[in-house]
Length: 99
Image (cartoon, rainbow, N blue to C red):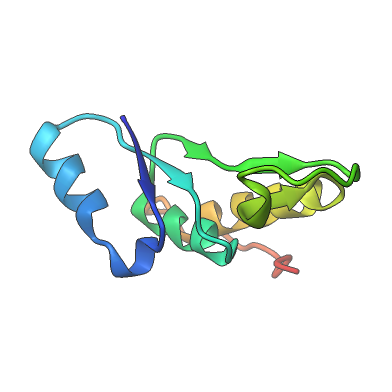
């Protein structure tokens, strides 16, 4: 199940769905602020759905919430660092790499 929220921090239905249906729930981003994707990591979604766009100038319906292709590597690196920051019951040392 993929859940799409316009603003996940204000919409806690993700937790309700996860508990009610006892199944994996992913996060699909349609918010123009990409930081909502970073916040979704704290909810530990099974999947993340977000849009990526290249450099061609072509307007499309998902333009306002798409991540530039040139920013994708940095964006995914930040997601991985945030996932690690949640911990796994074992204390680990990590660098502060969020950009």
